Length: 326
Image (cartoon, rainbow, N blue to C red; front, top):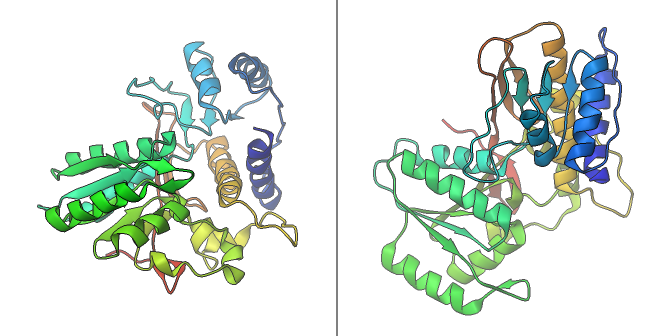
């Protein structure tokens, strides 16, 4: 996880250097194992006023199970995303990790708003994060009183099975779903679109945006995804966003594109520092127009609460463009 951790650290330090205030940042390195993380956390919490991290779900779970969150702790992962077992979050712990499940639920709320009858097909392959996204979408869709059907696509040698596409197209023609939610990446979504056509509106997560914001300038246009809707963070969509313009971007080698997921983790680091800085001055209820989304935070009194609202977007002329939703 070194590369992931480095991206988050770089974003955190970029935000700190922009607005250090009276804060001192001490960096604590640990191994990936949960016990190593717990040991590092216990050392950090004994010497600091606020702890930011860890990045791994297993590490955060170890801290919770050990009842160790004695000081304000901002966790950069998700505690309840892996299965149906709810983890009780301590009152001192704020959970603000990026979440494909939260993205899927937000898409469901967006697509299902003001609808009373709209059937959705929710489609993934057998990849774990994709199945989690589809499960979260379907649960939220059901919560809205709407009907969905979950489908898993067969893959052969990295490609969607041709027979699967034929069968799916027949079902779409027969059942006429109102929309299709895809827990897929951009390359898979293109294969799906070519196989079934673009008659039914397609929605998905940030994984449908395969480039960092700066790389779209010279990227090939993805015209096969025209009209597809998704959510992503301002850092990936809005160069003119006030917060996005404030912070430096990751340096890039001339020959290489930066992974969009690494960019998202760098942005998470920026917002983590901004949240920590507010907690440091005893803010208990605040909002931030963050680089990862619009953030709402309540902590320090009662159950902690964190919400991130992402930016809706659409493919226009083969590029991902921000979309204003009424």
